[in-house]
Image (cartoon, rainbow, N blue to C red; front, side):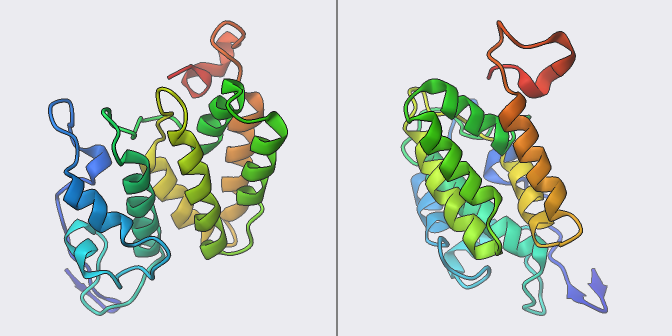
Length: 196
């Protein structure tokens, strides 16, 4: 499809985290290619090109592509050496971090501080750097705590819009500070506070 903004590659494939991996998880070589994007500009790593769905023919790095690039790289870090899929629908970042806090693997203050640093990041590069550390912490749980990477992609896309970033922060904070274990969760809280 050609527009005044250039041609966007229309790709019907779903991302790794949206496919059915009940029988086979993403291959190691694909995950390695995606991890190669950490700390690099979106579109700058040729091994990632086949995995994008928002790559444009005019070479412009759109907010969607920047968010997709970061989400793919973070997913690859999270999925590395895991025996089950690290994408789980309806587990937003705030909820995943609340479960990390409840695990007592790290002190509450340490988790609060790390999560707060991500939530108050003032640039896209800074928030992605903090998310890399948080994803690494989610991997340390036994079993590792999954995350909804579709939601994370949407959050990272919205993070780049000054009119939407505050809603992302509120959503993360709301998930984080209203989480209760199943036995304590109020019925009205719904699926957003249920345990994975």
